[in-house]
Amino acid sequence: MRSETLVTKISSVYVEDGILYTTYTAPHIHLEDSKQDIVLIKAAFADFLPLPLVIDNRQVKTTSKEARDYFASDEAASMVTCSAIVLNSMLAKISINLFLQFSSPRYPVKMFTDMESAIKWASQFKK
Amino acid sequence: MDKSRIVKSTIAEISFDNGIIYIDYYPMQEANLENAEELVNLIKTNFADVLPALLLSDISKLKNTTKEARDYIGSDAVAPLLKASAVIANSLLSKIIGNLFLKFNKPTYPTKLFSDKQAALLWLETYRNQ
Image (cartoon, rainbow over all chains, first blue to last red; front, top):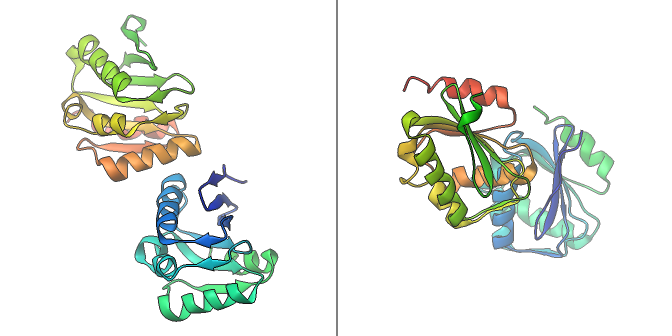
């Protein structure tokens, strides 16, 4: 069963069958919007967290370094058990690789080109 | 419920039963400083004999709360009136309002969010004799 959808400045977020789904709707992701997102997601879905996270990143063109570092921080990491990221561009893949290499998130992260595979992988991290 | 102890404010109905003050907000209201102060003053006036009390409020139907209202509700002006406050928040918006209140206002009285009334009442019972 799907929860209500939280719509923020940069994303659309809901919980369904034990997975947190985030679709980024903004082309450029910056630190301040990311911080606000995390605060709202934690407030809206406090009853469910932490959860496996499936991110639809296909509309994103750039993510700032500060935002990437923030997504790896304890503040963000405490929300998720893993992060499956669906993307469709070489630029996005480079950005995620930078995230993995330099931001060093302490939760499992994997890239995918389709939603179905992302969900299948993330499901193994359900509580 | 003792129907003689039902009071209506601009944004909510306040009632009392078995040691618990109930606040049921009307649909689509915005809680601001003015109507929050009105609510608290009505409680002080009409339920003075039972204070400090256990409080059960349902914010699921609220449209919005202003920062000034949240700051006031979480302040020391309200704390002496309450032993504990159980807040029912069933909608996404009300969960956000409730959790942000807890995070940023940090009320000095015990406050907890619930999705269902039964769990809220059970929790309040633990504060009845305090």
